Length: 305
Length: 305
Image (cartoon, rainbow over all chains, first blue to last red; front, side):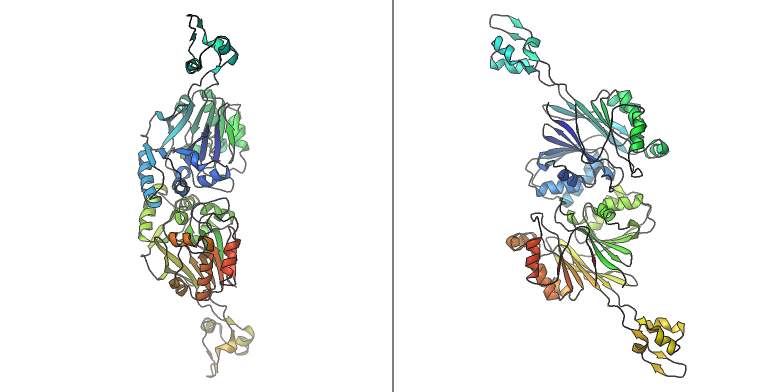
């Protein structure tokens, strides 16, 4: 199974505390690292979690609240000191790009690597990054200010060649690419060998959705429909639902409801208010809506299945 | 003895690592907290070291390199969430004030406390803060960019009244303030009682100098002459003296030399390059120049004596 993991660098809200760091995650897809959000301290969490700076080339920012991006300038300064050779692309809204261009000019004047900005319009839905095995889509969240979620979606994978069968049918090596992609084999005598005789099924293409800060909204369920793993903020429990309303956040129960409505595989809760000394009530209430819930914690590595 | 302590929040250089945080200190003078420099993570160190946000009203920034100020926006955001009532004054150079005004406008739009900027001109020598028991003086350091050191100097303290003697001479209560300040007592019959008969000496007025980033320069020794405690950066050991030259930093030996030339009480070393896994060589080389050396570490509290 190709590596596809979500590393939780921070899952607190608003401000770093001794229990939780502000929001940041690193998605490791086949040893390529993608960061989503970058709260203060994210660079130190990367070190703690042994995630290599040299493998990080894309950073996606959900919105311009400090607890989701104040670690970015420091992280990019540190990358510069590591004489990182390649480029980093920052995916964010126009106002973020304006702000960070200035910040980087001020603090990271002469980075040895290129910094690109991929400016995402407010409310944008669609692909913002793509490589040969993965795409990243943005979609709107519903918070106090413009906010974007991101879906990491693997592309359909190649089928597995069955060595015994390709030997038997004497399939030439040059045909293997096409056959992995699903084509039938036409033998020199014109016989057509059905692909399913030559291959076993590909591993499933998995998907991960990240919903940093949002109030409960059915459009979110629609956007993340069917993903294998959903991270959804769960700042409050039922007893503070009024705070969730007021501040454009969700309760854990609402996160569970979105997971159920969207028919996702598993749900990860995060962005916990610092009022909670344990996340027990959040877990319990989410599980009343949806059975398969993970409570995020710093240092956690969640493998997509 | 009135409280006068230096709390080391971070004593690494350039970038946070698992061994050291970037530069930040909190000086606690009679329960008023003064921060000098504010590298990323300083707010979390305050929590770890149980330093109260509510007591922090002045922050002094030495220069505009990221490892000395990238924690400031996050710290000020957190103060806002703590519904801090009073004001915070930021003491820094003009370019820093410009930068942070914008950053605070962006991330801390509606703080419930006032933020004042005390803009310090480049190269300024003189008092930048003063209250009834303490003054803070700026003085130039010699780094790659404009950089300011700070001296925290207690004002002369009141002498101690000797209860037995003021009873004996029947000194009225209304005279006590003048006598503590050093005045003689003139009895109703005209007899003059010398102040030294009525009082015992005041505690010494102590002083602390902070030299964040600087190359070796005799003018620094002159500026910090006679302070009780000197923090001086010591980024490198002798074997990397060429790096110190190139990057506008000091070796530990040079820090020791400044301490000796300035005739200070004790020397604290900090701003350690991340190349050192222990600070042994730094300590040894500094002590070849000056006997009383402390190696800073996160969480350390140094009492002025």
